Length: 535
Ligand code: ADP
Image (cartoon, rainbow, N blue to C red; front, side):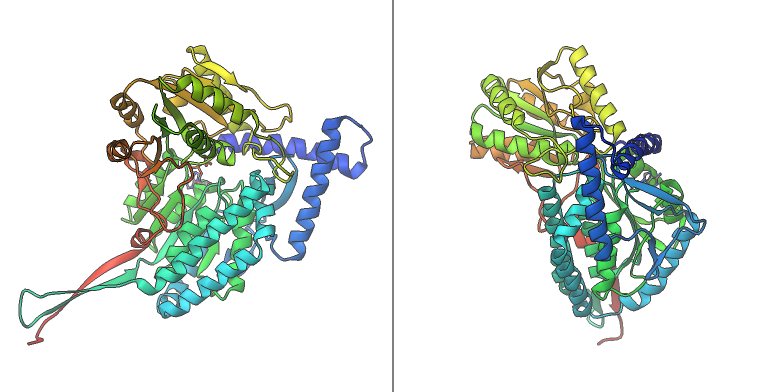
Protein backbone atom coordinates (compact mmCIF):
# COMPACT_ATOMS: atom_id res chain seq x y z
CA UNK A 1 0.00 0.00 0.00
CA UNK A 2 1.72 3.07 -1.16
CA UNK A 3 -0.05 6.25 -0.21
CA UNK A 4 2.18 9.15 0.64
CA UNK A 5 1.27 12.08 2.85
CA UNK A 6 1.34 14.12 -0.35
CA UNK A 7 -1.21 11.85 -1.95
CA UNK A 8 -3.42 12.15 1.09
CA UNK A 9 -3.29 15.92 0.86
CA UNK A 10 -4.34 15.79 -2.76
CA UNK A 11 -7.19 13.47 -1.82
CA UNK A 12 -8.45 15.80 0.84
CA UNK A 13 -8.43 18.80 -1.41
CA UNK A 14 -10.09 16.84 -4.15
CA UNK A 15 -12.73 15.40 -1.88
CA UNK A 16 -13.39 18.70 -0.17
CA UNK A 17 -13.99 20.30 -3.53
CA UNK A 18 -16.55 17.67 -4.42
CA UNK A 19 -18.16 17.64 -1.02
CA UNK A 20 -18.73 21.36 -1.04
CA UNK A 21 -20.48 20.94 -4.36
CA UNK A 22 -22.62 17.98 -3.39
CA UNK A 23 -23.56 19.15 0.07
CA UNK A 24 -24.37 22.67 -1.03
CA UNK A 25 -26.44 21.22 -3.86
CA UNK A 26 -28.46 19.20 -1.42
CA UNK A 27 -28.85 22.11 1.00
CA UNK A 28 -29.84 24.61 -1.62
CA UNK A 29 -32.13 22.13 -3.31
CA UNK A 30 -30.27 22.72 -6.57
CA UNK A 31 -32.82 22.07 -9.27
CA UNK A 32 -30.42 20.75 -11.88
CA UNK A 33 -31.84 17.47 -13.13
CA UNK A 34 -28.69 15.97 -14.60
CA UNK A 35 -28.44 12.29 -13.57
CA UNK A 36 -25.02 12.87 -11.98
CA UNK A 37 -26.33 15.73 -9.83
CA UNK A 38 -29.37 13.74 -8.77
CA UNK A 39 -27.16 10.78 -7.86
CA UNK A 40 -24.82 13.02 -5.87
CA UNK A 41 -27.75 14.60 -4.04
CA UNK A 42 -29.20 11.23 -3.15
CA UNK A 43 -25.83 10.07 -1.90
CA UNK A 44 -25.38 13.19 0.21
CA UNK A 45 -28.79 12.78 1.78
CA UNK A 46 -28.03 9.13 2.47
CA UNK A 47 -24.73 10.10 4.13
CA UNK A 48 -26.54 12.65 6.29
CA UNK A 49 -29.20 10.14 7.29
CA UNK A 50 -26.63 7.55 8.37
CA UNK A 51 -24.52 10.12 10.17
CA UNK A 52 -27.57 11.32 12.14
CA UNK A 53 -28.42 7.75 13.13
CA UNK A 54 -24.83 7.06 14.21
CA UNK A 55 -24.77 10.27 16.22
CA UNK A 56 -27.90 9.36 18.12
CA UNK A 57 -26.55 5.90 18.92
CA UNK A 58 -23.34 7.46 20.30
CA UNK A 59 -21.16 5.68 17.77
CA UNK A 60 -20.05 8.75 15.84
CA UNK A 61 -17.11 9.85 17.97
CA UNK A 62 -14.81 12.51 16.60
CA UNK A 63 -12.32 13.07 19.42
CA UNK A 64 -9.31 11.01 20.38
CA UNK A 65 -9.49 8.71 23.40
CA UNK A 66 -6.87 9.31 26.08
CA UNK A 67 -7.12 7.72 29.52
CA UNK A 68 -10.81 6.97 28.97
CA UNK A 69 -11.68 10.60 28.09
CA UNK A 70 -12.76 11.80 24.66
CA UNK A 71 -10.21 14.51 23.94
CA UNK A 72 -9.86 17.28 21.36
CA UNK A 73 -6.50 18.05 19.77
CA UNK A 74 -4.72 20.37 22.23
CA UNK A 75 -4.50 23.11 19.60
CA UNK A 76 -8.10 22.50 18.47
CA UNK A 77 -7.08 21.35 14.99
CA UNK A 78 -9.36 18.98 13.10
CA UNK A 79 -9.15 16.92 9.96
CA UNK A 80 -12.00 16.04 7.59
CA UNK A 81 -13.09 12.50 6.87
CA UNK A 82 -14.64 11.99 3.44
CA UNK A 83 -16.93 9.47 1.83
CA UNK A 84 -14.90 8.30 -1.19
CA UNK A 85 -18.07 7.42 -3.12
CA UNK A 86 -19.49 10.93 -3.03
CA UNK A 87 -16.85 13.25 -1.62
CA UNK A 88 -19.16 14.24 1.23
CA UNK A 89 -17.51 15.29 4.45
CA UNK A 90 -18.76 12.75 6.99
CA UNK A 91 -17.20 14.40 10.05
CA UNK A 92 -14.19 16.35 11.26
CA UNK A 93 -12.01 14.53 13.77
CA UNK A 94 -9.31 15.74 16.16
CA UNK A 95 -5.98 16.21 14.41
CA UNK A 96 -3.49 15.20 17.11
CA UNK A 97 0.29 15.16 17.32
CA UNK A 98 3.20 14.59 19.69
CA UNK A 99 1.76 15.96 22.95
CA UNK A 100 -1.49 14.02 22.77
CA UNK A 101 0.43 10.86 21.84
CA UNK A 102 2.75 11.23 24.82
CA UNK A 103 -0.27 11.57 27.11
CA UNK A 104 -1.90 8.53 25.52
CA UNK A 105 1.31 6.55 26.13
CA UNK A 106 1.38 7.67 29.79
CA UNK A 107 -2.25 6.60 30.22
CA UNK A 108 -1.52 3.21 28.70
CA UNK A 109 1.59 2.88 30.88
CA UNK A 110 -0.33 3.68 34.06
CA UNK A 111 -3.21 1.36 33.13
CA UNK A 112 -0.81 -1.53 32.46
CA UNK A 113 -0.06 -2.15 36.16
CA UNK A 114 -3.74 -2.80 36.83
CA UNK A 115 -4.83 -4.51 33.59
CA UNK A 116 -1.91 -6.93 33.47
CA UNK A 117 -2.69 -8.08 37.02
CA UNK A 118 -6.33 -8.95 36.38
CA UNK A 119 -6.98 -12.66 36.11
CA UNK A 120 -7.08 -14.07 32.61
CA UNK A 121 -10.75 -14.86 33.20
CA UNK A 122 -11.52 -11.27 34.00
CA UNK A 123 -9.75 -9.93 30.90
CA UNK A 124 -11.41 -12.64 28.85
CA UNK A 125 -14.93 -11.75 29.93
CA UNK A 126 -14.42 -8.05 29.17
CA UNK A 127 -13.11 -8.93 25.73
CA UNK A 128 -16.12 -11.15 25.21
CA UNK A 129 -18.41 -8.25 26.20
CA UNK A 130 -16.66 -6.18 23.55
CA UNK A 131 -17.15 -8.94 20.99
CA UNK A 132 -20.87 -9.09 21.81
CA UNK A 133 -21.24 -5.31 21.51
CA UNK A 134 -19.42 -5.26 18.15
CA UNK A 135 -21.84 -7.86 16.83
CA UNK A 136 -24.87 -6.10 18.31
CA UNK A 137 -23.84 -2.99 16.38
CA UNK A 138 -22.64 -4.70 13.23
CA UNK A 139 -25.12 -2.93 10.93
CA UNK A 140 -24.14 0.54 12.17
CA UNK A 141 -20.44 -0.27 12.16
CA UNK A 142 -20.82 -1.70 8.65
CA UNK A 143 -22.48 1.51 7.48
CA UNK A 144 -19.68 3.53 9.02
CA UNK A 145 -17.06 1.41 7.23
CA UNK A 146 -18.88 1.83 3.90
CA UNK A 147 -19.20 5.58 4.44
CA UNK A 148 -15.55 6.27 5.17
CA UNK A 149 -13.88 3.45 3.24
CA UNK A 150 -16.23 2.80 0.32
CA UNK A 151 -16.53 -1.00 0.34
CA UNK A 152 -19.97 -2.53 -0.32
CA UNK A 153 -22.17 -2.69 2.77
CA UNK A 154 -22.36 -6.49 2.70
CA UNK A 155 -18.57 -6.71 2.66
CA UNK A 156 -18.39 -4.04 5.39
CA UNK A 157 -20.77 -5.95 7.66
CA UNK A 158 -18.70 -9.04 6.86
CA UNK A 159 -15.62 -7.16 8.05
CA UNK A 160 -17.34 -6.42 11.36
CA UNK A 161 -18.01 -10.14 11.85
CA UNK A 162 -14.45 -10.98 10.80
CA UNK A 163 -12.93 -8.30 13.06
CA UNK A 164 -15.11 -9.32 16.01
CA UNK A 165 -14.04 -12.96 15.56
CA UNK A 166 -10.48 -11.96 16.55
CA UNK A 167 -11.77 -10.43 19.77
CA UNK A 168 -13.71 -13.61 20.53
CA UNK A 169 -10.79 -15.89 19.63
CA UNK A 170 -8.32 -13.96 21.79
CA UNK A 171 -10.84 -13.68 24.64
CA UNK A 172 -10.63 -17.48 24.68
CA UNK A 173 -6.83 -17.61 24.20
CA UNK A 174 -6.37 -15.26 27.18
CA UNK A 175 -6.98 -18.32 29.38
CA UNK A 176 -4.36 -20.44 27.66
CA UNK A 177 -1.13 -18.51 28.15
CA UNK A 178 0.77 -21.51 29.48
CA UNK A 179 4.32 -21.60 30.77
CA UNK A 180 6.66 -24.59 31.17
CA UNK A 181 8.48 -26.57 33.83
CA UNK A 182 11.86 -27.68 32.51
CA UNK A 183 13.54 -30.81 33.94
CA UNK A 184 16.52 -29.46 35.84
CA UNK A 185 20.15 -30.44 35.17
CA UNK A 186 20.91 -30.12 38.91
CA UNK A 187 18.96 -31.94 41.62
CA UNK A 188 18.56 -28.92 43.92
CA UNK A 189 17.19 -26.61 41.27
CA UNK A 190 13.76 -26.08 39.69
CA UNK A 191 13.41 -24.34 36.33
CA UNK A 192 10.28 -22.53 35.19
CA UNK A 193 9.17 -20.53 32.17
CA UNK A 194 6.56 -17.78 32.58
CA UNK A 195 4.95 -15.80 29.77
CA UNK A 196 4.24 -12.17 30.59
CA UNK A 197 2.75 -9.25 28.65
CA UNK A 198 5.31 -7.02 26.89
CA UNK A 199 3.75 -3.78 28.19
CA UNK A 200 2.44 -0.80 26.21
CA UNK A 201 1.75 -1.61 22.54
CA UNK A 202 1.49 0.93 19.72
CA UNK A 203 -0.86 -0.27 16.95
CA UNK A 204 -0.69 1.64 13.65
CA UNK A 205 -3.35 0.57 11.16
CA UNK A 206 -4.39 1.25 7.55
CA UNK A 207 -7.64 2.28 5.86
CA UNK A 208 -8.51 -0.86 3.86
CA UNK A 209 -9.95 -2.77 6.86
CA UNK A 210 -10.74 0.00 9.35
CA UNK A 211 -12.01 -2.45 11.99
CA UNK A 212 -10.40 -5.83 11.35
CA UNK A 213 -6.80 -4.57 11.31
CA UNK A 214 -7.35 -3.05 14.74
CA UNK A 215 -9.10 -6.12 16.15
CA UNK A 216 -6.27 -8.43 15.03
CA UNK A 217 -3.79 -6.38 17.05
CA UNK A 218 -5.79 -5.17 20.03
CA UNK A 219 -7.45 -8.58 20.66
CA UNK A 220 -4.23 -10.47 21.43
CA UNK A 221 -2.59 -7.44 23.09
CA UNK A 222 -5.40 -7.04 25.61
CA UNK A 223 -5.76 -10.78 26.09
CA UNK A 224 -2.09 -11.01 27.11
CA UNK A 225 -2.44 -8.11 29.57
CA UNK A 226 -0.86 -5.39 27.40
CA UNK A 227 -2.39 -1.91 27.04
CA UNK A 228 -2.51 -0.09 23.69
CA UNK A 229 -2.29 3.20 21.86
CA UNK A 230 -4.03 2.85 18.50
CA UNK A 231 -3.29 5.14 15.59
CA UNK A 232 -5.85 4.45 12.86
CA UNK A 233 -5.51 5.79 9.34
CA UNK A 234 -6.61 9.42 9.05
CA UNK A 235 -8.71 8.31 6.07
CA UNK A 236 -10.84 5.97 8.22
CA UNK A 237 -10.65 6.95 11.90
CA UNK A 238 -14.41 6.86 12.60
CA UNK A 239 -14.71 3.07 12.73
CA UNK A 240 -11.77 2.90 15.16
CA UNK A 241 -13.39 5.50 17.40
CA UNK A 242 -16.75 3.70 17.34
CA UNK A 243 -15.01 0.43 18.27
CA UNK A 244 -13.22 2.25 21.10
CA UNK A 245 -16.55 3.59 22.40
CA UNK A 246 -17.87 0.01 22.50
CA UNK A 247 -14.67 -1.12 24.28
CA UNK A 248 -15.36 1.44 27.01
CA UNK A 249 -18.97 0.21 27.29
CA UNK A 250 -17.73 -3.38 27.58
CA UNK A 251 -15.84 -2.73 30.82
CA UNK A 252 -12.33 -2.39 29.43
CA UNK A 253 -10.96 0.15 31.92
CA UNK A 254 -9.94 3.74 30.99
CA UNK A 255 -6.38 3.95 29.71
CA UNK A 256 -6.19 0.32 28.56
CA UNK A 257 -7.20 1.31 25.03
CA UNK A 258 -6.31 4.77 23.71
CA UNK A 259 -6.79 6.24 20.22
CA UNK A 260 -4.89 9.14 18.67
CA UNK A 261 -4.98 10.28 15.05
CA UNK A 262 -3.84 13.26 13.02
CA UNK A 263 -0.24 13.94 12.05
CA UNK A 264 1.01 10.43 11.20
CA UNK A 265 4.70 11.34 11.30
CA UNK A 266 4.55 13.18 14.62
CA UNK A 267 2.44 10.45 16.21
CA UNK A 268 4.65 7.72 14.72
CA UNK A 269 7.81 9.40 16.00
CA UNK A 270 6.40 9.85 19.51
CA UNK A 271 5.42 6.18 19.56
CA UNK A 272 8.73 4.84 18.26
CA UNK A 273 10.88 7.10 20.46
CA UNK A 274 9.10 6.40 23.75
CA UNK A 275 10.91 3.88 25.97
CA UNK A 276 7.55 3.16 27.60
CA UNK A 277 6.21 1.67 24.37
CA UNK A 278 7.55 -1.89 24.28
CA UNK A 279 6.12 -3.02 20.99
CA UNK A 280 5.02 -1.60 17.66
CA UNK A 281 2.56 -3.52 15.55
CA UNK A 282 1.91 -2.10 12.10
CA UNK A 283 -0.10 -2.89 8.98
CA UNK A 284 0.53 -0.72 5.96
CA UNK A 285 3.05 0.05 3.26
CA UNK A 286 6.47 -1.57 3.17
CA UNK A 287 8.11 1.86 3.04
CA UNK A 288 6.50 3.07 6.29
CA UNK A 289 7.05 -0.34 7.92
CA UNK A 290 10.79 -0.06 7.27
CA UNK A 291 10.86 3.42 8.80
CA UNK A 292 9.05 2.23 11.92
CA UNK A 293 11.39 -0.74 12.25
CA UNK A 294 14.40 1.58 12.02
CA UNK A 295 12.79 3.97 14.53
CA UNK A 296 12.12 1.13 16.96
CA UNK A 297 15.81 0.12 16.97
CA UNK A 298 16.84 2.90 19.31
CA UNK A 299 14.70 1.57 22.16
CA UNK A 300 14.89 -2.08 21.01
CA UNK A 301 11.15 -2.56 20.79
CA UNK A 302 9.50 -5.69 19.56
CA UNK A 303 8.16 -5.13 16.05
CA UNK A 304 5.39 -6.90 14.11
CA UNK A 305 4.82 -5.85 10.52
CA UNK A 306 2.16 -6.76 7.99
CA UNK A 307 3.39 -5.07 4.84
CA UNK A 308 2.72 -5.13 1.11
CA UNK A 309 2.22 -8.29 -0.91
CA UNK A 310 2.51 -9.20 -4.57
CA UNK A 311 0.36 -12.30 -4.57
CA UNK A 312 0.70 -14.75 -7.45
CA UNK A 313 -2.42 -16.75 -8.32
CA UNK A 314 -1.30 -19.76 -10.36
CA UNK A 315 -3.84 -21.57 -12.52
CA UNK A 316 -2.53 -24.90 -13.87
CA UNK A 317 -3.85 -26.72 -16.93
CA UNK A 318 -5.25 -29.40 -14.65
CA UNK A 319 -7.33 -26.95 -12.57
CA UNK A 320 -11.11 -27.11 -12.30
CA UNK A 321 -11.92 -24.03 -14.40
CA UNK A 322 -15.02 -23.07 -12.43
CA UNK A 323 -13.18 -23.31 -9.10
CA UNK A 324 -10.25 -21.31 -10.52
CA UNK A 325 -12.51 -18.54 -11.84
CA UNK A 326 -14.45 -18.28 -8.59
CA UNK A 327 -11.28 -18.28 -6.47
CA UNK A 328 -9.36 -15.81 -8.66
CA UNK A 329 -12.32 -13.46 -8.79
CA UNK A 330 -12.71 -13.53 -5.02
CA UNK A 331 -9.04 -12.93 -4.28
CA UNK A 332 -8.59 -10.26 -6.95
CA UNK A 333 -11.72 -8.14 -6.64
CA UNK A 334 -12.48 -8.24 -2.92
CA UNK A 335 -12.54 -4.67 -1.56
CA UNK A 336 -12.01 -3.49 -5.19
CA UNK A 337 -8.55 -5.05 -5.15
CA UNK A 338 -7.45 -3.09 -2.09
CA UNK A 339 -6.10 -5.81 0.19
CA UNK A 340 -2.53 -6.99 0.77
CA UNK A 341 -3.55 -10.56 -0.07
CA UNK A 342 -5.35 -9.68 -3.32
CA UNK A 343 -3.99 -11.59 -6.32
CA UNK A 344 -1.61 -9.15 -7.99
CA UNK A 345 -0.49 -11.50 -10.79
CA UNK A 346 -2.66 -14.22 -12.28
CA UNK A 347 -0.33 -16.81 -13.82
CA UNK A 348 -2.14 -19.11 -16.24
CA UNK A 349 -0.64 -22.19 -17.91
CA UNK A 350 -0.70 -22.00 -21.71
CA UNK A 351 -3.09 -24.96 -22.21
CA UNK A 352 -5.91 -23.28 -20.28
CA UNK A 353 -4.95 -19.64 -20.94
CA UNK A 354 -7.53 -18.77 -23.65
CA UNK A 355 -10.40 -20.55 -21.90
CA UNK A 356 -9.52 -18.99 -18.57
CA UNK A 357 -9.14 -15.40 -19.77
CA UNK A 358 -12.43 -15.58 -21.69
CA UNK A 359 -14.44 -17.01 -18.75
CA UNK A 360 -12.66 -14.77 -16.24
CA UNK A 361 -13.33 -11.60 -18.26
CA UNK A 362 -17.01 -12.58 -18.60
CA UNK A 363 -17.24 -12.97 -14.82
CA UNK A 364 -15.47 -9.65 -14.21
CA UNK A 365 -17.83 -7.89 -16.62
CA UNK A 366 -20.74 -8.86 -14.37
CA UNK A 367 -19.32 -7.10 -11.32
CA UNK A 368 -21.51 -4.14 -10.42
CA UNK A 369 -19.68 -0.91 -9.65
CA UNK A 370 -21.25 1.80 -7.48
CA UNK A 371 -21.84 3.34 -4.10
CA UNK A 372 -21.32 0.62 -1.50
CA UNK A 373 -24.67 1.45 0.08
CA UNK A 374 -26.57 0.49 -3.10
CA UNK A 375 -28.04 -2.98 -3.47
CA UNK A 376 -26.07 -5.48 -5.56
CA UNK A 377 -22.87 -3.42 -5.78
CA UNK A 378 -19.70 -5.49 -5.40
CA UNK A 379 -17.15 -2.86 -6.43
CA UNK A 380 -16.97 0.40 -4.50
CA UNK A 381 -14.72 3.36 -5.24
CA UNK A 382 -10.97 3.34 -4.65
CA UNK A 383 -9.92 5.09 -1.47
CA UNK A 384 -8.85 8.31 -3.17
CA UNK A 385 -7.68 10.10 -6.28
CA UNK A 386 -4.04 9.12 -5.73
CA UNK A 387 -5.04 5.45 -5.76
CA UNK A 388 -6.76 5.89 -9.14
CA UNK A 389 -3.75 7.74 -10.56
CA UNK A 390 -1.51 4.88 -9.50
CA UNK A 391 -3.78 2.29 -11.15
CA UNK A 392 -3.90 4.40 -14.32
CA UNK A 393 -0.13 4.68 -14.49
CA UNK A 394 0.35 0.92 -13.99
CA UNK A 395 -2.18 0.08 -16.71
CA UNK A 396 -0.61 2.61 -19.07
CA UNK A 397 2.85 1.15 -18.44
CA UNK A 398 1.65 -2.42 -19.13
CA UNK A 399 -0.21 -1.53 -22.31
CA UNK A 400 2.71 0.56 -23.61
CA UNK A 401 4.96 -2.49 -23.13
CA UNK A 402 2.73 -4.88 -25.08
CA UNK A 403 0.10 -6.14 -22.64
CA UNK A 404 -3.44 -6.48 -24.06
CA UNK A 405 -6.45 -4.83 -22.49
CA UNK A 406 -9.17 -7.50 -22.37
CA UNK A 407 -11.72 -5.56 -20.32
CA UNK A 408 -12.05 -2.10 -18.73
CA UNK A 409 -8.87 -0.09 -18.46
CA UNK A 410 -10.20 3.33 -17.52
CA UNK A 411 -11.99 5.40 -14.91
CA UNK A 412 -15.62 4.50 -14.44
CA UNK A 413 -18.31 6.83 -15.76
CA UNK A 414 -19.53 7.33 -12.14
CA UNK A 415 -16.53 9.65 -11.70
CA UNK A 416 -14.93 10.28 -8.28
CA UNK A 417 -12.47 7.45 -7.59
CA UNK A 418 -14.44 4.72 -9.32
CA UNK A 419 -12.41 2.56 -11.73
CA UNK A 420 -13.69 -0.06 -14.18
CA UNK A 421 -13.01 -3.68 -13.22
CA UNK A 422 -10.18 -4.49 -15.61
CA UNK A 423 -8.47 -7.55 -17.08
CA UNK A 424 -5.13 -7.28 -18.89
CA UNK A 425 -3.65 -10.21 -20.81
CA UNK A 426 -0.10 -11.02 -21.96
CA UNK A 427 1.45 -9.26 -18.98
CA UNK A 428 5.17 -9.89 -18.37
CA UNK A 429 6.69 -10.14 -14.92
CA UNK A 430 9.04 -7.20 -15.65
CA UNK A 431 6.12 -4.76 -16.02
CA UNK A 432 5.37 -2.33 -13.19
CA UNK A 433 1.96 -3.92 -12.66
CA UNK A 434 3.58 -7.30 -11.89
CA UNK A 435 6.40 -5.85 -9.80
CA UNK A 436 4.37 -3.71 -7.41
CA UNK A 437 0.97 -3.92 -5.77
CA UNK A 438 -1.63 -2.32 -8.04
CA UNK A 439 -4.12 -2.10 -5.13
CA UNK A 440 -7.08 -1.67 -7.44
CA UNK A 441 -9.59 -3.64 -9.53
CA UNK A 442 -7.10 -4.65 -12.22
CA UNK A 443 -6.25 -8.29 -12.95
CA UNK A 444 -2.98 -8.74 -14.85
CA UNK A 445 -2.80 -12.17 -16.49
CA UNK A 446 0.58 -13.77 -17.30
CA UNK A 447 1.17 -16.88 -19.41
CA UNK A 448 3.53 -19.70 -18.39
CA UNK A 449 4.58 -23.10 -19.76
CA UNK A 450 5.90 -25.30 -16.92
CA UNK A 451 5.45 -25.70 -13.17
CA UNK A 452 9.11 -24.72 -12.62
CA UNK A 453 8.62 -21.54 -14.62
CA UNK A 454 5.47 -20.64 -12.61
CA UNK A 455 7.32 -21.11 -9.30
CA UNK A 456 10.27 -19.06 -10.56
CA UNK A 457 8.00 -16.16 -11.65
CA UNK A 458 5.94 -16.37 -8.45
CA UNK A 459 9.02 -16.14 -6.22
CA UNK A 460 10.71 -13.43 -8.28
CA UNK A 461 9.70 -10.61 -5.92
CA UNK A 462 10.72 -9.15 -2.56
CA UNK A 463 7.21 -9.70 -1.26
CA UNK A 464 6.00 -12.97 0.24
CA UNK A 465 2.57 -12.59 1.85
CA UNK A 466 -0.09 -14.70 0.09
CA UNK A 467 -0.07 -16.99 -2.95
CA UNK A 468 -2.81 -19.07 -4.55
CA UNK A 469 -2.71 -22.18 -6.69
CA UNK A 470 -5.44 -23.91 -8.63
CA UNK A 471 -4.84 -27.55 -9.57
CA UNK A 472 -6.55 -30.92 -9.23
CA UNK A 473 -3.29 -32.74 -8.53
CA UNK A 474 -2.62 -33.49 -4.88
CA UNK A 475 1.07 -34.05 -5.52
CA UNK A 476 1.39 -30.73 -7.29
CA UNK A 477 -0.53 -28.96 -4.49
CA UNK A 478 2.10 -30.06 -1.98
CA UNK A 479 5.09 -29.56 -4.26
CA UNK A 480 4.15 -26.04 -5.26
CA UNK A 481 2.90 -25.00 -1.80
CA UNK A 482 6.26 -26.01 -0.33
CA UNK A 483 8.24 -24.24 -3.06
CA UNK A 484 6.40 -20.92 -2.78
CA UNK A 485 8.24 -18.35 -0.62
CA UNK A 486 5.02 -17.07 0.93
CA UNK A 487 3.52 -17.01 4.42
CA UNK A 488 0.03 -18.00 3.23
CA UNK A 489 -0.91 -20.40 0.42
CA UNK A 490 -4.48 -20.92 -0.77
CA UNK A 491 -4.99 -24.17 -2.71
CA UNK A 492 -8.16 -24.10 -4.80
CA UNK A 493 -9.35 -21.31 -2.51
CA UNK A 494 -9.23 -17.54 -2.90
CA UNK A 495 -10.43 -16.44 0.54
CA UNK A 496 -8.00 -17.67 3.17
CA UNK A 497 -8.14 -15.24 6.08
CA UNK A 498 -9.60 -16.49 9.34
CA UNK A 499 -8.99 -15.67 12.98
CA UNK A 500 -7.91 -19.25 13.73
CA UNK A 501 -4.99 -19.35 11.24
CA UNK A 502 -1.67 -17.46 11.23
CA UNK A 503 -1.57 -14.47 8.86
CA UNK A 504 1.78 -12.97 7.90
CA UNK A 505 4.49 -12.80 5.31
CA UNK A 506 7.95 -14.00 4.28
CA UNK A 507 10.70 -11.68 3.00
CA UNK A 508 9.80 -7.96 2.93
CA UNK A 509 6.11 -8.65 3.52
CA UNK A 510 6.68 -8.51 7.23
CA UNK A 511 7.51 -9.96 10.61
CA UNK A 512 5.34 -11.92 13.01
CA UNK A 513 1.91 -13.48 12.62
CA UNK A 514 -1.60 -12.29 13.43
CA UNK A 515 -4.51 -14.51 14.41
CA UNK A 516 -4.36 -18.09 15.78
CA UNK A 517 -2.34 -19.26 18.77
CA UNK A 518 0.79 -17.88 17.05
CA UNK A 519 -0.74 -14.40 17.15
CA UNK A 520 -0.24 -14.28 20.93
CA UNK A 521 3.54 -14.78 20.85
CA UNK A 522 4.32 -11.28 19.61
CA UNK A 523 2.73 -9.73 22.70
CA UNK A 524 4.50 -11.91 25.26
CA UNK A 525 7.89 -11.93 26.91
CA UNK A 526 9.36 -15.23 28.02
CA UNK A 527 10.73 -15.22 31.54
CA UNK A 528 12.94 -18.04 32.83
CA UNK A 529 12.99 -18.52 36.59
CA UNK A 530 15.72 -20.63 38.16
CA UNK A 531 15.02 -21.63 41.77
CA UNK A 532 18.04 -22.84 43.72
CA UNK A 533 18.47 -24.49 47.14
CA UNK A 534 15.47 -26.74 46.48
CA UNK A 535 17.10 -30.06 47.45
P1 ADP B 1 -1.39 3.27 2.93
O1 ADP B 1 -0.81 3.25 1.59
O2 ADP B 1 -2.31 2.18 3.22
O3 ADP B 1 -1.93 4.59 3.35
P2 ADP B 1 0.66 3.74 4.85
O4 ADP B 1 1.79 2.86 5.24
O5 ADP B 1 0.99 5.07 4.29
O6 ADP B 1 -0.18 2.87 3.85
O7 ADP B 1 -0.33 3.94 6.06
C1 ADP B 1 -0.65 2.95 7.01
C2 ADP B 1 -0.73 3.60 8.37
O8 ADP B 1 0.56 4.15 8.68
C3 ADP B 1 -1.69 4.77 8.46
O9 ADP B 1 -2.28 4.79 9.75
C4 ADP B 1 -0.80 5.97 8.27
O10 ADP B 1 -1.33 7.16 8.82
C5 ADP B 1 0.42 5.52 9.03
N1 ADP B 1 1.67 6.23 8.68
C6 ADP B 1 2.03 6.74 7.48
N2 ADP B 1 3.26 7.29 7.56
C7 ADP B 1 3.69 7.11 8.83
C8 ADP B 1 4.88 7.44 9.55
N3 ADP B 1 5.90 8.06 8.97
N4 ADP B 1 4.96 7.07 10.85
C9 ADP B 1 3.95 6.41 11.45
N5 ADP B 1 2.81 6.07 10.83
C10 ADP B 1 2.67 6.41 9.54
